[in-house]
Every structure is written in structure tokens, then in C-alpha cells.
Amino acid sequence: MVSFLIAYASWSGNTQEVADMIAATLVAENVDVTTYRIGGGIMPNPRHFDALIIGSFTWDKGATPDEVKDFAADVGYKPDNVYVFGTGDTQFGGDELFCLAADKLARFYASTYEPLKIEQSPRGVQQSTVIEWSKGVIKNWKNLHE
Image 1: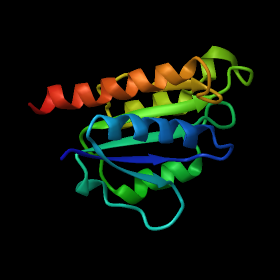
Image 2: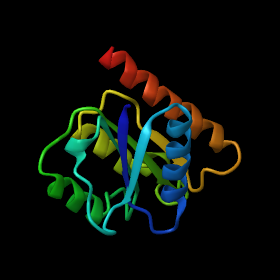
Image 3: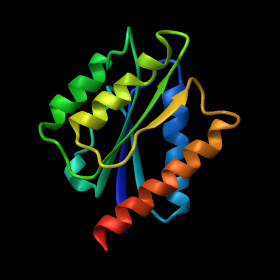
């Protein structure tokens, strides 16, 4: 069975909500999923998974939170098969800074799949965006590994 690690940082709960929706979608697609809140408990080893999905909120003028940077450093290498999602808020910095942490992480990991960007909470119309992105992730992974 294919296994994915979803590692995320969340302060307000929005990024955690997205992570939970992604996990539920992947489980429905017969993917084994482990979720890890960055900074909480023992970090799973990404080498034990087929892919890593990393999620972050964007902080302070487009910055990636320190705990996400620390996670990347603690991993110690750049895994293959990394997918990125982020939450943000256009009222702080407009479109230019919206989910900039997700863009930075996608570049850092050389992710070949477009990062998911969610305005604040994934509720309402954004739920379908999260679900479709998640289904696209597993389809992309399967296409790369068949």
C-alpha cells in the first residue's frame, strides 16, 4: 500500500483543517496516511513513506514559519515526491504575499506539482479545491511510479 506523510504547521487551525481534509481524501483513495503536526511529538522519518506532503501557513510579510524551517533541517535531506500546501490571508500583503511560504517550500523541495493555496479556512467552496488537489496528488504520484 502507498503511504504518505502529511507534516504541517498550524497556529490558528486552518492549516490543520486542510491537512485533515487531505488525509481523509487520500485514505478514501486507499493511501496509508500518517499526519504529523510539526513541533509536536516524535517526528516520523520521511524515508519510511512513499511521499511527503508538507503544509504551512504564511507568516509575517511572506515568511515561512521557523518551525517549518526547523523541520526541513531536521529531515536533513530533500525527499523525492514532495507535495506542498499552504494557508494564507490576502488581507495581509495582498496577492503578492498570499501563501508565499507554500511557493518557497515548493521551490526548496523542487516539487513538480503545483502547491495548494487556501485563503484562511478550507470551509465552504474551498473544500472542493482541497479534495480535487488531493486526488490530483495521488494521481500524479501513481503516474510517476507506474
